Length: 242
Picture 1 (cartoon, rainbow, N blue to C red):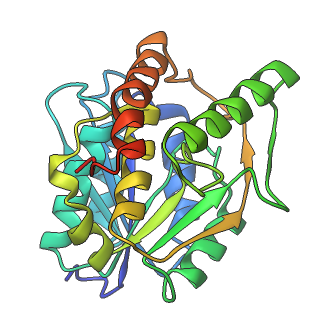
Picture 2: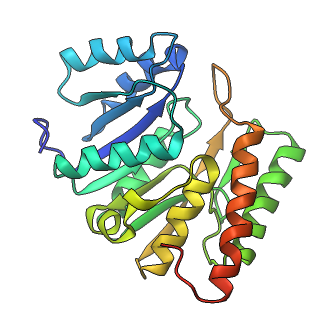
């Protein structure tokens, strides 16, 4: 266990988050949690900032990687690190302030009672701020299509704000996931369903990032579409994805 003796580890992938990371980590340190930043060799010096913070706070940990390897890969490495350190709960969160700290409190509270807790924009009380109507409709449609194609009852399949228990991570067999981007969140959601884990969605408000550049790309969208096409048939034929 980490020297901070907490049971919860928040895993945060970063790439060029220099403008946000210092204040973000300092605010996150107000919670009774440990923090793992998985940095993909950010050329803007994000990793150096985290390294300095980790030298003065037992709550902050840095996992440096040699190159930009993708979101799913970052979480796989983060989960592995957390399991090795014997954390009981592993959370995913973004470093750009799109996920609110008040919503983090909900995930932490529910984590003791569920295998998987998902911060959802698409249940009562959830939503997004800073998106135009076109982006909101696209996101909502993508999630509805994912639910239908993959026979899922999860409302927010692509949410990156979530918590897994140690038990859930072990049963999901996360090491064998292949996806990155949105499709990683979808794949983890389906594996949670297939393993009959207890899943609860809690409402969150998703904020448009404060500073820095969005990591969204056509490649990420295409990967998600290919995942749906490749795995939708498996779900309808009751063939396990993992």
